[in-house]
Length: 199
Image (tube, rainbow, N blue to C red; front, side):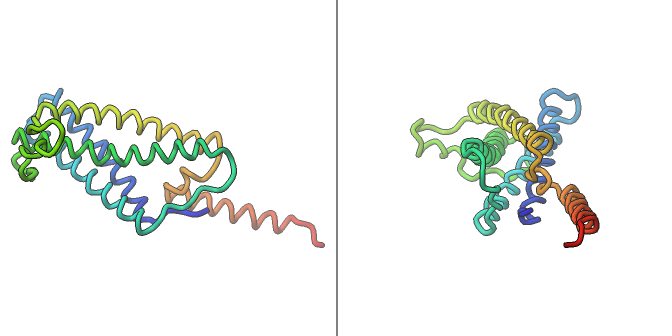
């Protein structure tokens, strides 16, 4: 079983937990009763953590290519999975980036570093004007819900591969499962070699 490098695996699960924290603090800031400014800051830092980890993962994928899937089967599901992965990468970059634009424009999180010259961002685009915080906020919310939908599909696909197709896609992304699977495989091979009749 070919496994991805351990740094990519750690960055994968680190980004997953950071996204959970970002969602929790974001919902708490909007709908909660606690200190809103501190919660927004926690939400912003969790989002920036996601952005940093995704950049690290993309950098690692250029240095250490992802293990190729086993040959065979239809090519269409593989293309769909590849397209979903790159869409997830794009959204994990764009979602915190639009949130960062909102934080920079509104000044609600003074401890979060602001983007430089954010008012000039739209001057080079077709809109020809500055990017407003409200526009960036609506785009950010749209990206959040789209990202959540794709993550749900991603999780369901991983569970489908593990319990229905019974391949190693999920196992190789969870080191504990990988070790158990390896030990079971070795035990099974040893047992088979002991029960095999001598030739």
